[in-house]
Length: 514
Image (tube, rainbow, N blue to C red):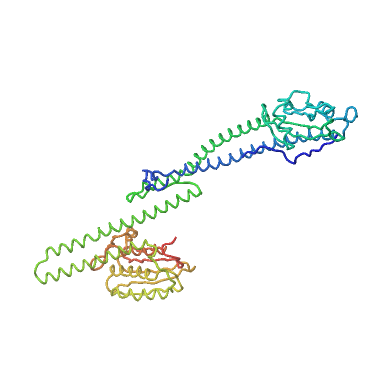
């Protein structure tokens, strides 16, 4: 027998494929009303990404299973067709060795001996011809198929009349994927001995039902995993954002009257770093507000006395010209004192600013000589320059001079004319620090007073002649040394005078850096 139909290269298959609203108000804990919380946003994004990922996994898995089933069905159809073609090309019955005289004999020999799967159907059909001298019509497998597509009806006509060699047709048992081959007698088809069609079909519903069950199970597992992932994302986001909520709540509770709250966030992650920076900001704010309050308190405390004195003298001032001149003199003196107090307070307030110092390179010997020349004009004392250091240093020469002049002025107030006052400077052997000092022969500073005298408005005993200062001089000295990251020390014994030593690093980088 011969065949005049070639198998198609591929089978026919099924394809599947509020803006513009007013700004929100704040909640009591600092959150903005109407905004979506970060925790909800994180959870939503995680769920969205998980949904997209799981959807892709489900689609890819379903498509892979469909492809696997399609390929398996195609292999089954091709295998049955190949076996038939091998027998047809040989042209002899394998059982008897006799040649097939017609297509019907070929079909009965081959189809009758087949035992296909329950979801397969194999049949042959010899063309109907009124002049045929050989049997015509269908030749079907022996066992009963799910649906007899070989029987006369629309299914068989759709298969046999199709111009394609492969296709899908609907049946009461579901889609049937089929493949057919044209077969002719060895001597060619004639009206007396017509050719026919060999057909192999496969009912795909059973296999597709298995895929659908697998897909439904996968979807159910994915939904369960999505719910668990959403719950886990909500919990994890809450744990991660807890310190941030604490920062927000702390910020909402901070007021000008209470800057003492701090955030304790252990760890070394970004959130802990945020909390650390926030605490640093609170430290700076608290220091700034403290300086402001201290300035106001100090100014109010120290200016109250001269204002009272000025007012009192003005209220009792008479018409006598001499009395008026005396009152004007006293008032002017008090106003000068008030001006000095204000200047000192402003200087102390500026000491906390980054631009308080302007460090430059300067030779120690030149700076010491300038200081010596300036302090000698402060009073009639026996000034002695003990030592002059040598070497370049980097500091603010004007502020250092201001501190030394303040110490010298303080020594003048605590000594009498002709008393000795010593000044000097020295660079450490390792070159890392430089020291400036002022020593006097005054009454000295008791040990219990040596720390207190550097506080604002603290006045020491033993001032010689006249009225003492406002008690801000040594506070200014300490502010200047602190700004240089230096130290100020007092070496004194009662009745033996005092020696104030300022020590500065020689390589200060910038003002108020640490």
